[in-house]
Amino acid sequence: MSKMSLVFVGDSEEKELGRQKAPGMCPYCEGKVTAMDVESNFRCCFLPICYKIKRKYICTSCSKQLVLYSD
Image (cartoon, rainbow, N blue to C red; front, side, top):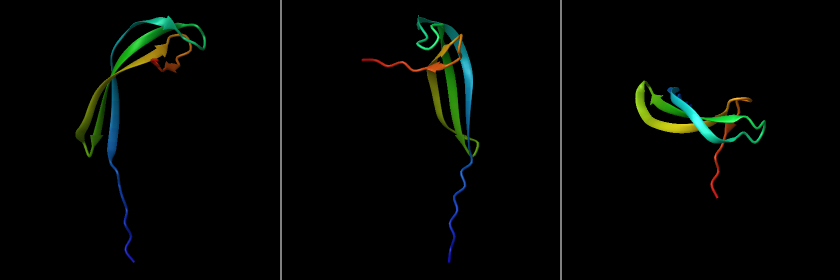
């Protein structure tokens, strides 16, 4: 009987690039919203696989991450 095992060695890292004011207000607490640019790196066995820059929206009062939907 042979046994197969899978080991995944990966790491994900996020670094904040900058923040700026965003229009609108938080739907939960009506606080101000901040747009944050984040650089994310994904590595597998210490080799860089994926590199992305994302924009995240965060409420400054309740610290919730907000999701932007378009119609």
